[in-house]
Amino acid sequence: MAAAYGGAVTIIATLLLGWRMLRAGQQARLDPRKSMRILYVGAAWRFMLAVALFAFGIGYFKLDPPAMIVGFVLAQLAYIFVGLGTRRASD
Image (cartoon, rainbow, N blue to C red; front, side, top):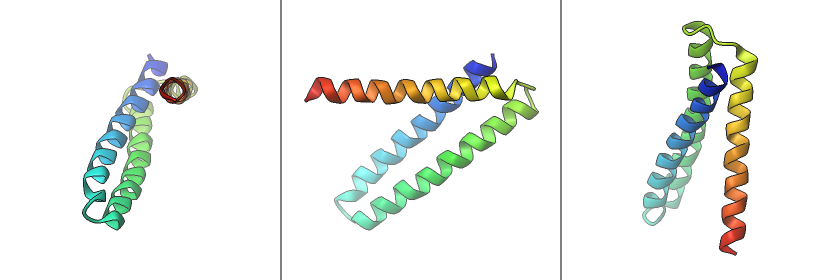
């Protein structure tokens, strides 16, 4: 359960990243500096969201922290490998 929760934290944080990237892409044509601010603020929010979700999982659900971190890391690695495979397939 804790590992699945850690993986869910990755998914939620990635959805936030995708939404912020879409907003930044829309703003890039109008104001490139505002686009960069959107990305930086999004990175900060993503970090704070991950910390808050981990704290919630540990405090409220009483989940095992090492298992949550393993699930989080494995999901992050999966995104990296999928991204690398997608980029190579499109080259």
